[in-house]
Image (tube, rainbow, N blue to C red):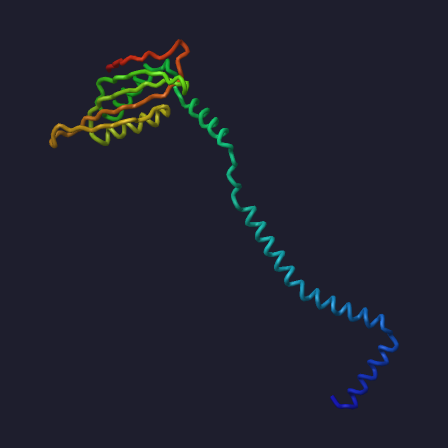
Length: 199
């Protein structure tokens, strides 16, 4: 570009601005600055929208938070669940028969069961502590215990002791102690006595 052509371009601009006026120049300047700001802001706004959409998608796919339960309500719910799992104290003969059947199914020798009923007045339930002297192999005794606990959700295995007379003896003797948690019998309080049942 020569000096002469540059001078012509400047003269044309001066003539143009003289015809248009100052308001148009100001409007053109503001429009140009607005467009440049808009072009500069669009990528930043777009990136922010993408980030927020990603956060929303993550929140939607996240599992719902566990419900918050007051300790008193949780205790009441657990107590109600406990009472629904209890069997009736009037069914003790069926419980003992079930123990003998489970022993037979597991291949365990069970000749007798000693049990002692009791009442927990504060807890509003009866218990039957049942002592079972059994004979058999360790796998059979374990299978017997598992089947009792699965079939009777109100039962707890309190104690188990193993005894073997000699190394050459094929099986072991075990003393099992279960506690059965039962709903009180409507006929009256449980008898606090030791009884024995035999097959």
